[in-house]
Structure formats: structure tokens, C-alpha cells
Image 1 (cartoon, rainbow, N blue to C red):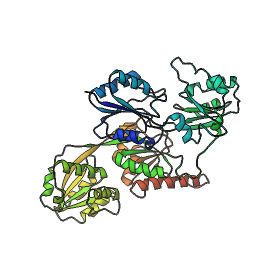
Image 2 (cartoon, rainbow, N blue to C red):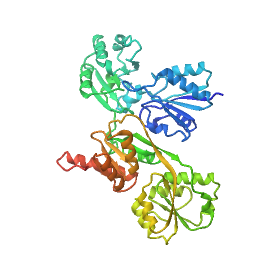
Image 3 (cartoon, rainbow, N blue to C red):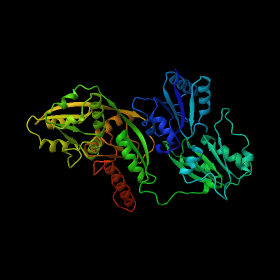
Image 4 (cartoon, helix red, strand yellow):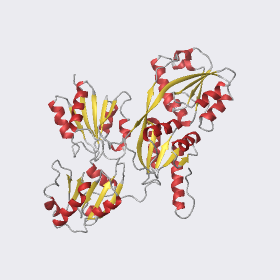
Length: 499
């Protein structure tokens, strides 16, 4: 039995730069084998049941052997699976996609190629450098400086005389040798040059200079791989808009489940921020211990949700149990905040209670004021839910805890350099501490509410910002205000963060 393999280029940078066909293949795959520098949000586009297998390659770091990757793709396909091999940039531009295609062909496995935007073009472009420009460069040459025999590419001298843009991939450790060869070939020392580490690189950098001094500048800046080297007249251009959002250039790491992270990502990117997923929390449904068909018995009871994920899993379980939604007419619904109420409304139900403050404490207090003695309340939420809500309601009502799911954190790789790191729950703080240890120096934590902020202060001992509004927009507003205060602080005013 043979499956099918899609060799998909993910492009360079945010997840939404992937081609539509690549995204469609992700949505229907049964296994995804992904590279290290692919935006982690893309692996979340695969179905929850799909296998997720990291197979990254990173200079100086842990890497999967190419032969092992090829064997894995063949094995998965022979199990009858639809497989996506998700590669940074383009599969055929120094991505070894050709080798994988040959291995699949030899094994008799059907496959396809889905192009992506190569880092040779995308990384300079994101830094405002076009690889061609009328009057400056009629063409460009892309080459690797990391060859099997350890030598630099042949023909550099001839390329130096053509006047086109030269783009080197995987050449950071050989930068000064490259510059020396080009200078010896007659290229002018004042030729513009740039060394760029961007996209989803954990250590972003953009060093500009000339062929004569780019080696020294790059060494002084401490640039780490991966990096793209651009040499030629176009490297002197900086075609970035001066009308970007207020968070342009700010790197924000986000944690939490896919539902929350996607809402936050969209909001941050509209403000111009660069968003990176640093810790994903997969939603793992739990076996149900409660008979959901009891909801059809006409008893007045409250159904309480503390997250959109709980709403989603609950209605999925109702479908599986063949519960007619019309039989829920006797139920009342309470949601912790507007986002959860919105998820409920998407299923055709309006919340009877949304507290003025989107916290479990406020939810418990306001719901408690409406309950009759020993009235039934079902808490439909994560197994890791805050016990305070149950304890508050048990003083009045007959509370049934129904754990629908648990969140399972999945670290996406080494922590990148960040300006801010966001948290949407106290449990997310604990998961981060266990998975990552601590917060990188110079990174501010941004927490969605007081409970989460308290957990961050106690567990992470890092600068903490607390959103005034418990929502994705509240987190973004907190970051924006902090940037504004930081700018004012440079003029002698007080900064915004407190330990």
C-alpha cells in the first residue's frame, strides 16, 4: 500500500507566506515532517490526528541525517499515509529536495513538488534589498559557500567582473574568505554588502557595510547562522516602508493553544510585529466520564465554559454522542469572557452570563449570585483548570467537574531572541518553565490577566506586563503602551515594566 508525499516549500518568515496549495496539503495530511526554521504555526495547520515529526537541519546544532529523512518519508508513505515534507524556503534551492524526490522515485512512491519562496530572495527582500534593480543589477547569482569538499565555489572571479548581485547561502563562517577572493578578483572595496539573518532565525541580525569591512562588522555584531550574504550595488538599498505599524521591528514570542495563538498572531502582525511561536500547547481530548445524554432530560442546569477550546471539544463530543442540540433548551450557558462567548455563538448558542471581568474569579462570583441552592452546574473545561472556580461554586451549587481535554505543551526549538513573550494562562506559565527553564535576558513577559501575571512573577522572575483587558487585544495594547513608555524613558521618563 502506497501513500503520497508532497515536498512543500514553506517560504521564509511568517506562516502565511506559504503557497495556498502547500497549506491545502497540510490541512489533509496524515504526517508532517518539518524543518527547523519553518514557522511552528504551520505544523499546527495539520489535522490533530496527524503525526508531527521534526527533522530540522541547523548549522552547529542538532540535525537529522539526510538519509534518515529519506528513509522516514518512504516508510510513512508505505504505511499508506499522505505525507507533507515541509521545508524552509523552496525544496529545490539548496533544500536537498531533489535528493528526497530521487529517493521517493526509486522506492516507487508517488510525490509532488510545491514551490516556496527561497531564502535567497525572501531574506534580502524582507530587509529591503531587491536582488535585481534597474540600473544597478540586471541579474543575480545564488550559490552555497558550504560545499561537500569544504572549498569555495568555483568561478567567483568571473562573477565578480559581471556586476550582478551575488547571494551566498550557508556561508557565514567563510565570509572573510569570500570577500578576499572577490577583492582579489578586482571588485571594488566600497561595493555594498549585507549579512542578514531573518525569517524564523532564532538570532535576527542585519549588518550592512562594504565588501572591504563587512567581515569585521559581522564579527563585531556577533551574527550567528543561518545568514544570507548579499554583495553588489543593490545591497546598498533599504526599500522598507517608513509607514509600518507601531510595533514594526518588535519580536514577540507567543505561547498557548492554536486557537488563542492565531487570534493573537493576527492582531500583532496588523501592528507590524514579527511573531514567533515558542511553545505550542496541543489540545488533547480526554475520554468522557460523564454521560452527555443526561443533558437531554429537561433539567435546568448551568453549563460553564472557560475557553473556546472547551466549547469546541464539548460540541464535538455532543455530535459523537448523537445528542440533539434542541434538547439543550433547559440549559443555561456561562462563559468566562467575550472570546469564549463568541466561540459558543458560532455553535448557535448565546451565553446567558459573561462576567464584566474575564476571570474565573469574577465568573464564580457573578454566577454564584444567580444560582439557587444545590442547582446543577457542569464545569466543561480543561483538566488543568483553576480549582478556585469549583471551590467558589461548591459553596452554593451541585458542581460536576467535566474534564474535556488537557493541554500538552510542545517546545518548538531553541528560544529565539525576543522583545516580549506572551502568556494566556497560569498553566501556560508553568508549562513554559518546565519546557524552557526561564525567560531570555532582556525579554518582557506579557500576561493576559492578574492570575497569569502572578504565576509569571513567582515562577519566571522576569519583567512582567499585565494586560488591562483580558483578551488578545489587551495583550497587544500592553505591548504598544510599553513601547511608547520605553521611548519616553529614553527622554528621562520612567519605564513600564516591574518585577
